Image (cartoon, rainbow, N blue to C red; front, side, top):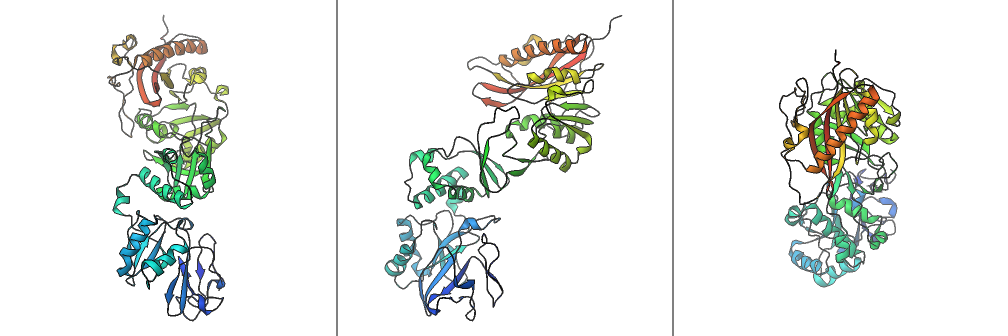
Length: 511
């Protein structure tokens, strides 16, 4: 039988036993150049070439024995990556531990393991372990001891590791790995480590403000394998600034892995997308939950900036919208949007309009329009007015980044003049309840406990401009009413991402 399958797996097939040896094969090197498998005394395996890996020396009846093992990162798909360990008899454990601690080789992230044959395996930092260390252990530290390097396939985290935060664990493992490569660990490198990140399944998305020091370049690509191992992922990507190309394409570089497609489940909705081509904002979860609770049954909605379906899907899946027209001009986002509509079972209630929404041919169709673009969606306001139903009007959900300034007292939203009722008929109010189903209309406004004066001023200005646009587009006067101002998140210092719910209705004909 031929030797191993994939070089990534490093599996060796024994021609006698017909079993793969993982993680290591033993060789009696005194028997000749071919080598003899220690697991079967009558067979030869691995083609006489153990290959690259960690070597250990020990005295045995047959002579010096070597053991080969792969690096932990070669075991893809495992929940816990294997760790290198030095095996010896229990009576030598303490001597080994003291030596390994002094040489900064002891892996404190994993527990010492008792092997089936009664020996003890001490986890070590395999990247820094050298044959010289093994000789010193066998000949000087504990003469006559068995000193074998193996791998623990399912290492048990130490109590210290279990109590560490992910950021602390990352710092500890990266610093040890860096020192093992002969690079001096410094405060500058530690400060350059990430303190937070996004995790999408087995892909880690780092922010742009980490790993910027020049020293990291000389440690790639193995550096990213160490980062992935420390945080329990298999792929690593790093985020840059969003490209100013109008399509909101993220400047994301894939550092480890062969593709950037991920799946994220948010409020029971599945989103699939390529992180290197499409954006995903965890910070919008409060608005997506609010959208999911709006009373949209039997309504037609136009989402002018659909992306991968951030708001299109909550409107369809939870809010019960009858139909959504989703506009998007990023081709990669359109691919993801189409996929997400299918996997969530709502593709039959949505039409994708690919291209510039300012050229959209739709009109007189929408009960609601979502304008989910920041820092401003003003370019979409004319088309939003155009698609509203001429005879009944509808509601606009307008996203905006609004600058605010510290030191000013918050003012209750209801104290503003803009909250005074000026409608000739009972008004329809949108509720803000954090449920997953559609809710009925309410006669009571549910507003934030407090809002900033800057939000109010911007909302009043937007209301005035929208009223003017509505009259220009439809050729008759319309009434507008601010129903709600919803804070989404702080986008930057003194910059707030908010959403204005603006009700727009044509004025009744007189006479």
